[in-house]
Image (cartoon, rainbow over all chains, first blue to last red; front, side):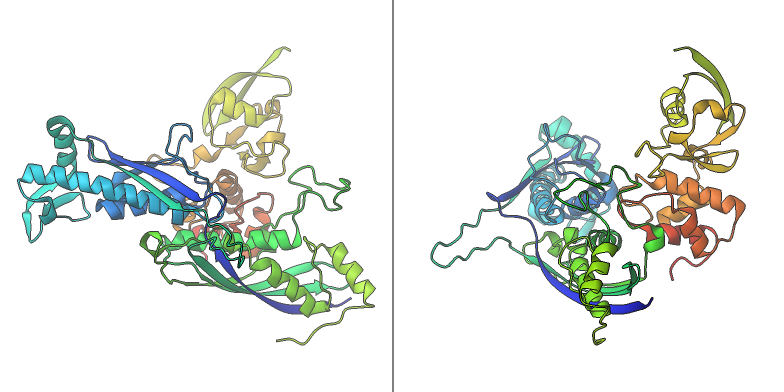
Length: 340
Length: 158
């Protein structure tokens, strides 16, 4: 029995969002009389951080502290329309919609403040700490709370804004076959190192090194978290997970978490991640979004690493010990490739 | 079905309830006592998010018959908070971003507490072993391991 080390690489281009009949998302932003803002969305936070990121985008656009913004994703029946949380579209599509809504709400807020301060709205600016003042004259100031109260009880205005971001359907050009399904692309490159046991067919992860280019990272810790966990989802698809191991024969299908294989804490290996930020011209504050891309390069990199280790090329996922063993047997033994 | 009276200590407080035969501890805690901190994940002992301590030992509450904890001490995640202060483990989980969607967190924290109570300075391998019955579907094991290391005074990141 020998354990063979192998290294594999993969790089990807990842389009943000999708193109089925156009890709819209809407957002509504309004102020309460307390001067706190609510963002209404139908987009769902699955744990990826959508609420945190849209909250930051709204606060930054309005010019108010992030603590003053609450994001409500409660109900897709009563909220503004969203296509959904998939295709890595959340930060880019929903973020842009929130930005548009917050910009409109900010316009109303500045008009209301101008009326109270008896100045022109164009001469006002926000300090990001909950105050609006005359440019160059910070003492001529009013709090966003007092503006909200005045708008509500004196001026009879709603401080609110509507936002939509739509990437229109891109039709295929019948002459050339060309289309533009996405407006921006994220990129990634990942090197996986594995150890393949030629007696059991087991593949163990040894280490991963990756670089992700995903526009501006609006919340670097959330991005890191997603890249760390997402890479292991990629490993899981490459090596473990399947509901139908002998498709279409349902035999041996897993029935619960005990039989459905996933990586556990003992499978984790070191993973060094570099985040490269090249702001997207049409992204909210330059963001694209890590999303699904964090899992995608792992699968081909692991398959390449297995080839490098024992010389078998397996193109059917997941790459189970059984498939590795059968392939090694078919070629008459492990054939380690040149290590690069 | 007849009900059975059941008394035990819940997070330091004596509680008395009536349970149907066959009621599991998770249902007793959530539905009869109203402590929602142990979560229902798979109901089969496969995911670990329902983990609680019974007399200091880690138990899967979904697989524990409620009647078997009569007269014993049950601790849930709710026992970790001390007034407005977070438990050092909760603090470490927050500081190390050890929760993503958060559904596994209650079980992870209880598994970590069971470990640190009997082994205050565990190695990385011992931490991995201690949480190996808990599934994190966001696959954020690395920050969870680092948080437990940090809470035990070890180095947070390798």
